[in-house]
Length: 324
Image (cartoon, rainbow, N blue to C red; front, top):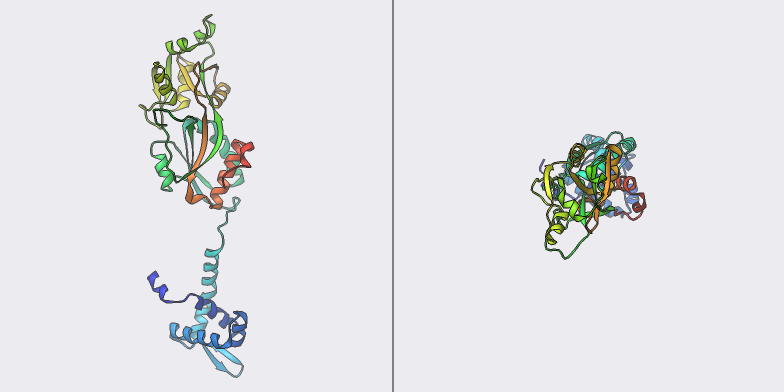
């Protein structure tokens, strides 16, 4: 079937045909459709022309459908019901939906939010499928293309600086703040620096070796911290680079290296490993975790539900002001 052939037909005629076949009377069909009997008769004439069949023929008791009309009647109701469903607002029932969602996030957000979120989410929607992918340089583009439906990234709360944020989002991506955070340092519990009488300051911080997690999956990427240090003429001694925050934690457990990361991730890390938190000896702007998606999903009920669930789980205080 060529879809363009349907352009030659007034699809309203199908509605009229359904009513005519149900009523088997032009008069009663006209009343139901709020038409004059003359208009209904003209509609029947057009239907006969389209289907090349009389469709309804008169007898002593009114009008009877032809064999062709009887065959049409068996299909027409289902067809009109399908069209009606197309016109209904989209619906999403988490209890029965088998929808497939693709999510992405920066590594710290994954460790903080997603593993424990998947359980409650799948309890509420037991048949959906979740596909998680680590954030990379291609993630923003994939969000705009619809290849990924929902992402979590960060923005640095700073302006008028001579460098560009490593995460730049296209204008057609929506964002919803999740949580604000700031940077702290982590060392192993028996790190020598904890037993020295010298104060914990910038000089001590720069003397130590550091482990750095990749930025957007790239080993040569730099964090906001490094740009701010460079502005003041400082540079960290980065002794190791790893692709994940979790890998950085395992390294500092067994070395004298320092890991600098978000405070909320540090809280998580201290629960998992024998680590000690130290303040960052540098005034640095805060960061904000952002939920992000393409604008095409704004009115999608399933997507709205997924965003609401995630926001309520991560930050109930902000959920009332969420973008829907």
